[in-house]
Length: 177
Image 1 (cartoon, rainbow, N blue to C red):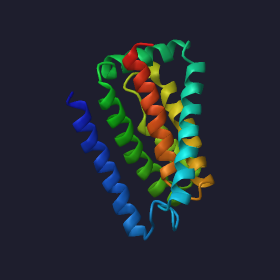
Image 2 (image 1 turned 90 degrees about the vertical axis):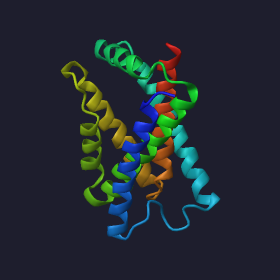
Image 3 (image 1 turned 60 degrees about the horizontal axis):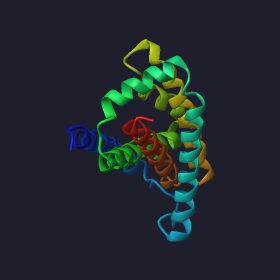
């Protein structure tokens, strides 16, 4: 196992901790009442998985753009050697940490658009030529936030979507497709 996954666990665990503290101070839960019952949880997970697959398919439509090829090369260099279990672990911890913070904690406090823009800023690239990635992240944040709203504040839906799109995209990098 690379050092990346444990470090990611610490980082995204800290994000989840900040979100949990925020929610506790606000007196809110990350899901609606009864949200952990199978009748509420399973539809939220299904909706999230569907959106995650749709976002992954949509990302293929722009793969030919020069900046997207550059981004893919950068990510392949960073994540291409991860094993399948590491890909799944990284996808899950990033989905949980980011969605607890941006959707469950932040979005109810500031609104859908500001939370989506902040999500895009959190994905700010280190190289200027990859700047469109921040815009795509903001659009993905908008879709994840809309899903959160449609699912009546059930954070399991955007967590599932985020984890699915990350697992699919990281898996694609790993396989060199």
